[in-house]
Image (spheres, one colour):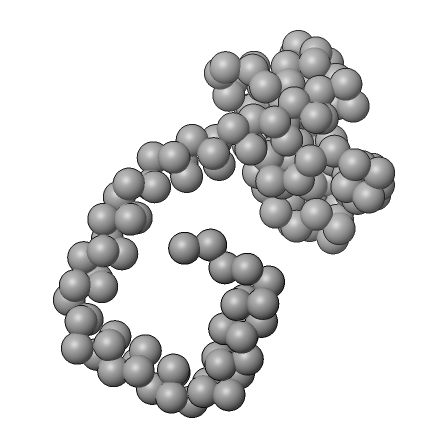
Length: 165
C-alpha cells in the first residue's frame, strides 16, 4: 500500500504522539527476539560483506587514480637516484613517501594510505603540498629514520669520515 501525502502526515502525527509507546514496544520486541534479530543481522552482514569490500576497493582505487597527474608516475629516489614509480606492483621499485619533517606534517598517516582514502581536490592537494613528502626508494626510506634524522646524518657523516682511531 502506497502512502498518500495525507496518510503519511497522519502516520507521522501518530508516531509523534505515541513516541514513548512505540519505543517501548520496539524495545520489548528486541528483547523477546534477540536471537532471531542477531541471525537476521548476521545474514545481512554476510550478504553485503563482499559487496562492501568490493565497494571500498573500488573507492580506494578511484582515489588513487585522481592523484595520477599530480604525483609523478616515474621519478628518481631523492637520495640514491634509483628510478621509482607511482603505483608500482613491487614495493622495491615504488615511490615511498618520506615524512621529511620528523612527522610534523599536516598528514600524519602513512602517505600512501592517505592517498587511497582522500580524493584529489583543492583542499587535499593543498594538504599534500604542505606536507612536503620526499620521494624515496624502499631501501633509502627504510634506512633513514623519521625522528632525529639530522643528528643521525651528522653521526653517520662523522663515522664515515673518521679514520676509526
